[in-house]
Image 1 (cartoon, one colour):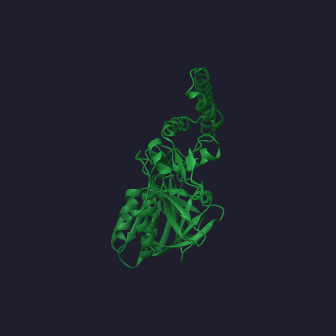
Image 2 (cartoon, helix red, strand yellow):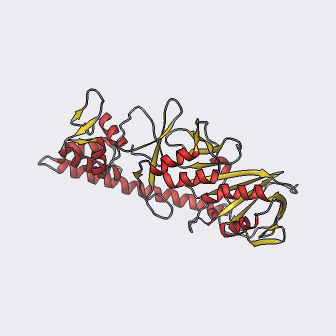
Image 3 (cartoon, one colour):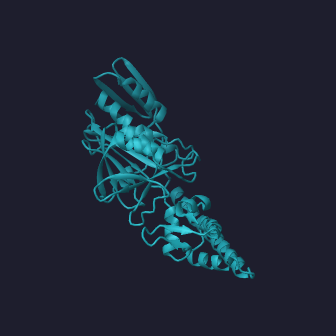
Length: 363
């Protein structure tokens, strides 16, 4: 007999997927411990789980998966072949429809002269900032900046000036970080400037002293002066996504964590091997976080058969980066639904926080 953890490892299905398919009556374990409720699988069921994993990766509907598993070992394979062919036709039709919709969307963008394409910018911005605060803001968001050449508008740090407040924002689609600080000298309307990450890094290197920093934008040129030193370069000629829409999330369950202890648990705790979900194509190490009734956050492994708890999967490296960028010994983790972003917030500053997109767990 194989434990649920062994079956998950040998089949490529996660533990949560095996639990789901058990509840759905698709792959029922050969034995369930009457005391602990732990699931055990017969050797031949491991092969069925591998087949199930392939069907799931192909996106086959659950009703068809039932029939494929029921007919797989039979002598007459016509049913299985027919189901596979019908599913392939659905996928091809769906791809054709998706291409049509994407083409229509591109036409709409072209019609309204998509601002995501490069275009020269005009305007003047002059700000007086406190150098240590700007350094802290850049440190809090820099880890989330993108480097995907197909999305150049994400390859920088947004300086969003509104009244006497400066928001500093970065995102690479999988994570987003934002910081807020006071700004003086801007009396005009809201202005947004995307500073390329190399220039943002050069600016950060200037901010070593306690004193004022002067941030200026002249047409398409961005300059930061701190003391007698200066960093200057071209702004990115792209519009940044409307990050304010991305942070409008339903309130979730907030849990305060001791960061050193939580970091140690993440670094030494179990991970799941995720898909190549990062923008550089590398595979993710996924940590599954669960919140107990007493507010304790634990990092769970594949072999932990806790059917009554809902886990949130996150990229472990991304979460460790976010903890380091927040730079606090105590932080607030805000959990929503398993499909909602995980928020990492400071206890003393609501305006500086980061969001991590969840990694979809099996089913």
